[in-house]
Length: 162
Length: 290
Image 1 (cartoon, each protein chain N blue to C red):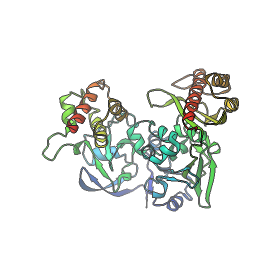
Image 2: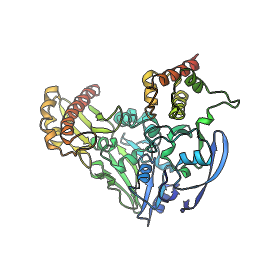
Image 3: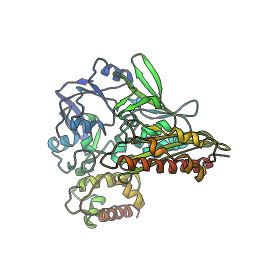
Image 4: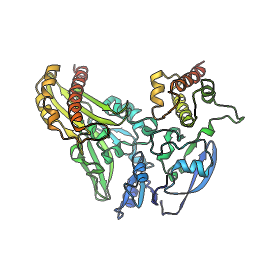
């Protein structure tokens, strides 16, 4: 497959629904998500792969969407923060726990934190505090001091176990 | 951020990747992209064509070699290596290091081959691969050639992989009887970018029989601490032996000052980390002796 500077057709699943699009090769995935899919819950923080605000789940793996090109997700399944909320609009358990534990102040890092926390709890239902810290190491928060984020993830994990 | 226009191609096999690279001197291989995409953003490099190799099944995964060693596909991610039971069983150091690189998201995309081919001084795997005596398999249209790790790494962004070639797999010897490995880093934050790091592979019988020490971040490629290795041979690698062996190491190195540390500090840290890494490797080798 070879495509020039033109637009490349891609097919993917976005939050459970099939989607087709044409993208430029140089388009970063995060910009495709925000500007073309109009899913603006995914944030651009640093644009250098450091802050994690753009974290999404691609084929079951948490990734930073500013570090991929849009044509790379052809044929993939993409889950963004909008995909966490249930069909009836109610919050997912991890979103509910963030709400209750006040795990955000400005909220800029929150979509990425939620996706990393979701990825952790999907793979490890009973993480230790160290495992939680290790899981959100790629997500930077500049205002909560992380304590309430830790508490929220702990609440969501405990509810899962009970 | 808007990148310069580039052509995106996706390889379906090694042969396909080589065909897409052939005749395009300005083509670059795109694997995990955890460094290359930033390079493209900064426009440090402006390749005309990208050849995405992440979907090439024969470049991914971990296999056992007939000699008991490991064969790791170049496009295998750090996360896949860290989750591979065979890697923990055969050469745990490789899995340990894969599990502490950067963060979860980077480990889910970044690949061992990308880490090796970029050969940035702060990258973990060049030093690890030199210490364990890995062999890197480079494939071109004429076939495969096997390059020992020490000859593979040349300078940042430069390795033995020539234009039109592809690093396809990495062979890693099994931990030998009496073997002990260790990786020790001083980083700018926990599991963050290294200021200096050290990988050590020892083999100990009645005394130290083999020692390989590679230091990262103190030159354009991993630096072997040859004098220390020689001084360790035949000793018990006791704290006194190791302390004596590392003396003068720092003065023999020529690191450069950067935002994280001065050259003098790195020389000092390198000597301290080599001492700690050798002691840790010796301790582990005791568990591997009967």
